[in-house]
Image 1 (tube, rainbow, N blue to C red):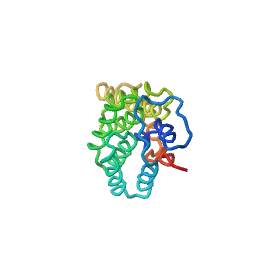
Image 2 (image 1 turned 90 degrees about the vertical axis):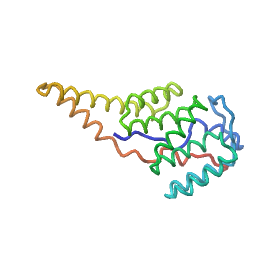
Image 3 (image 1 turned 180 degrees about the vertical axis):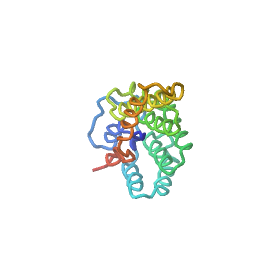
Image 4 (image 1 turned 30 degrees about the horizontal axis):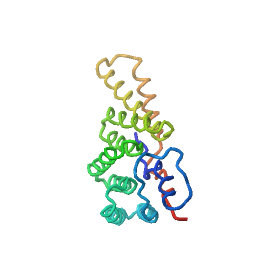
Length: 201
């Protein structure tokens, strides 16, 4: 099972574009300070990630955060970089701090759920995704990931049932169905919205 991580705070993009003079208004702006920053900073970090240069992307993100430490978009990008380079614990800390400072954002909860799921912590992943959906009921990726979590939890429950009652003929077909469902999940390490990072153009 591979959940869908996000690579940009899409709920902040309208605010960032408006602050940059893009003339785009957020329909439901989050009640937080907008950190306009040069949009090129976000774009350049995303571009470095796409080019397979996470070390340079992380260096640029940290340099930006040195002067704007509360910027949620760049903090989120930093978390994405850390996760994609295998620094999962640091990524977890980054996303956790982000939801503490900006609990209204859904995307960090989604990426926390991805980390929880990779550790087999399905209950925590479910809770994180439910919070993301409460923050944004139209958040399709979180709904999809939540479905995958329920499927994984069902698989675990069926496996336990089979261990406890090996001769139960009703469990194997259900378990096979769930396993087939999870195995058809396409590799989801693709960037979902990196190309939509704020731009001055």
